[in-house]
Length: 287
Image 1 (cartoon, rainbow, N blue to C red):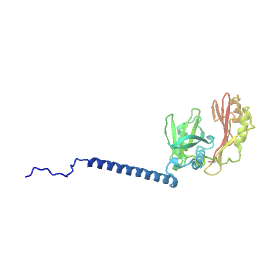
Image 2 (cartoon, helix red, strand yellow):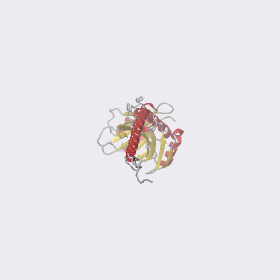
Image 3 (cartoon, one colour):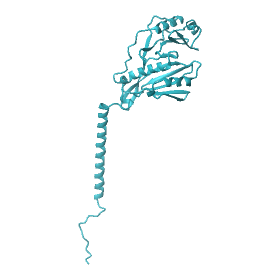
Image 4 (cartoon, rainbow, N blue to C red):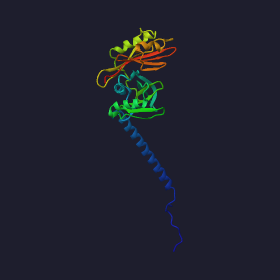
């Protein structure tokens, strides 16, 4: 048997293994890059052409009419006797839809009278009268009972008591692309709310020559709920006691500096401070 060693055979532990590992890493890197490019392309096509599926893809101009209709639904559910005011639309810019895109959010508020009643019971009554599709309910919140509902199109509704015999209902779009922006519906013609506001301003010795702002919302059954409001002038105003004759000495709410009363079909809300007065006169939706 020869003791010669054969030559020309590569060792299994030779340099081929590192070369194979490098090739595999390059292949995995190429596949990863291709997959990332494919995902980015599919995302772009989806954003441009597919129906929106999340809040951030529905622009503010698309959400605006949903918010306005939601305010009208809330006005109907609250009832004309308990509706204190419709707040004007507030658009806040500067939020981020994505890390690379700015957005804005739209909010509208509805003021509701609680008076000496139970806030939870009032919220529960409102929730029962809202559309079933809203899935409205009342549960415990951080500072008391809280109403939560979904008005559709990713528009949220919540309501909670304030500290002065009132509830605040808020309709909120959350942050979303601006699109063409929010454009309020044209205000309807002034009604008895304007006359009631003028009378309250005069009773408080406030100038009544400037036109009040008119805020509206479409009622589900037709027509509009309307609020005429004014923060007219500055400087000291008369006490809310000056409104007692207009209230027939039977106010709905007398929690200084807040005073509210009914004048026919109109609810008048006054917030009178030492240096300014804010008044709102509101006509609600028909039952």
